[in-house]
Length: 368
Image (tube, rainbow, N blue to C red; front, side, top):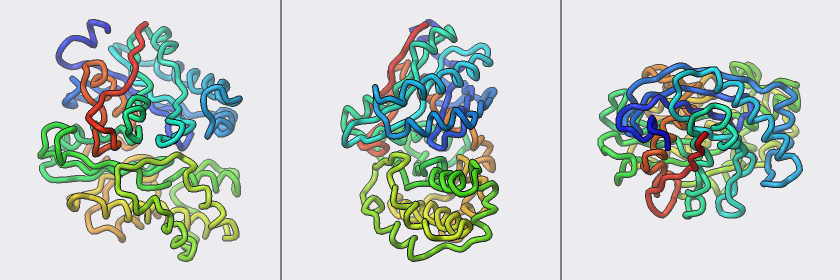
């Protein structure tokens, strides 16, 4: 481990995230000692081209050595290297990579991204493969942002429970009690995937309109939710499972057939309603009602989705920007923070976040 990472005190950590929505790579600097957030630095984004997204789509659901994995890995690494090389004075990098398949009770979890290659290219230590150890020890391997959410709750000065909702390709919820000092402490966290979020809406828009997503919820806004389809969707046994629990991007393949005969606008409205209803069902698992729900990820920009959440929930619903956080970069920042925790031997998940048997620190460290 480099002296810069091994030293006590603050570290300039750079995190990178390529999410299940397949839009591109986020990168963000965080100054942290692995316990507290001491400051936020620059951020940047590198979108995938249409051709690159096609390569990644073909590889979804594939495992190591499957035919489309190598081309997907090249796309992911080229995008990351181009973006991360722009940053200066970085002491450690957290590389999440691109999830292609996630089956924690079966074949495991599969993210493409080569930490050895990136460490050589950037000349700094790279922490990567964050999820495998958790899965090997009986955890879901996801979500991994909750320990960072705990630090965020303290950074914003929260004194009572709050919840963070990430609406990316998949939705995930973190309930945080900032009165508990350590994230692995009893009662500090509960986290789990709520259900599908933007991914099926994006897939619908691509298939029917040739668009990447429903910008500002404009299509859903003109449609109506088909309640029969919504009720069938909510019959899925996943929603009654006690958390922690996690999902693959394509865990609800029947969603498209449920809206298959609907007009475009009604299909978009119904898929958006399904995302919101998943959150409502998930909130039932919170140990006590949060004082507010802070929404991050692309879903917070969808006014239809946000209004569905507001009218359904008993607590205030806000984008995270209202408390001074960056909803586009929170996950990238999380992997910067987690990289420092891994490098310093601190846990990154625990029984109430992933279901792992004990608090565990995942991740491999590659050195240049």
